[in-house]
Length: 353
Ligand code: SAH
Image (cartoon, helix red, strand yellow):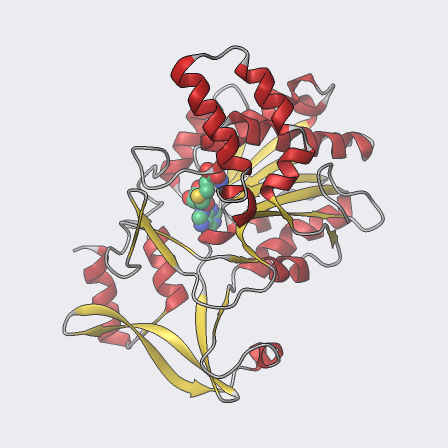
């Protein structure tokens, strides 16, 4: 049996499958899920992320969080957490960069929120010098000050898609046509939760919702509001999504989201308005392009410093990595960052209220 056969059998038995159920099954099915059994990152994998491009990304994020921790009076102990840590590279870079901040690493109780057993093992190898606790959901984070980062985590949460039909909505679903998986539309129905979107859409427009986003954001924000701390969230997307942003990627190439269930990465753009809404009673920073944030924190000076020790191919790829992280035509503008922090406190450096 393959994941495709498993999904087809379910559709035969139960009818068309909601897109978020398909998406979640493809990524995290216990046996055949995309993340469950593989390490997909890097040039030999399916895609590359900012921490895998350059150590500078994690270093600057770490120092921004550590500065906020100092401004908060250096609470100890505190939870240093990451959602969806991939290979653990970002957390390793944060810890190395913050080793010079007195007391920070000693007071940090590291928690990684990771659903994939395979990636937990990769993270354990990357972070073998540190004591780490793994949890599979944000709801299990400890009740104490929380300094948290998430990069390309929320884009991996399953979405639903709805097409507007008059004052009602038709949901996109995965069905079967002559044995092949196909996308179709369910019947037009009222959707009370989508009432606000009747104001900014017209007939035929497609919108996306992510049911898992708000409970996770809220679990993080509640702890930050009660005990102090901050969260830095990086992802591609913007304020309020419109249109179909579902993407499948395999071996660095876009592919059809239905063609290889469990064999390709699935993502969707993150709706930063939904993050901002769900972070109450915390406040949030302006949504800021990743390139602007990194420049404000001095990535160019850090890049020049690192370049002094490099020559030849290593120097060229270092220069390319700096450009890739910050240039508006590369990741600098497509990726955004938002900070979540308690009201009446300052945002972490690099961001504005
Ligand atoms: N932050 C990393 C990896 C991003 S890929 C980087 O920047 O390189 C998404 C990560 O989130 C993977 O580690 C994946 O296993 C994890 N993940 C996806 N959905 C999850 C969920 N619902 N709960 C916990 N972890 C999840």
